[in-house]
Image (cartoon, rainbow, N blue to C red; front, side, top):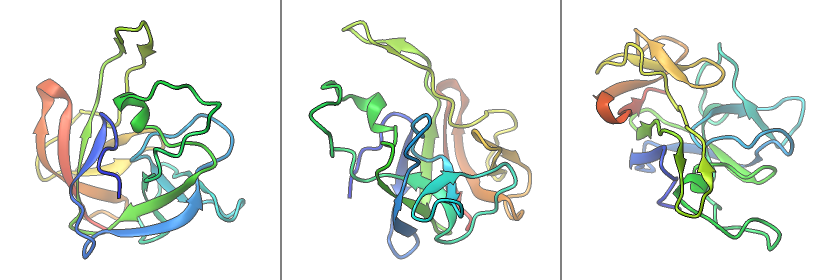
Length: 178
């Protein structure tokens, strides 16, 4: 299993007795590439594919959870030859991925500012979560584009509960609740 998911997401505890993953489903073949840890669900219109979960999505074991793509090193000869920590956090289109959830699985997120690499490449800002109202004990839900606050971590649409937050660096840790 890959251990590096880039600058914006990772596991603190990925104990397989907690974590549940539904694999052998693909990311969308068209459209913008998805960030790892995007909330995704099975796409009933395209069997075998995922879609971004909607704002009212409820976490469901094996059918709606966090996007993880393990085969990040599967690169074609026609792709850009530069691979860095930013590109590790982007799921490749039309490639096998997994829907991950499981109460007790601990994850971390980090928002990053835009930056220019030494070779002149401009890396865009990444906002995985909205830092408004983040506090230990509060939940995180998916609004269709990023993780946002929900007061009750046991609510039907809450995917996780915040366990640690460092606002100066835009980082948080959370435990999945479903």
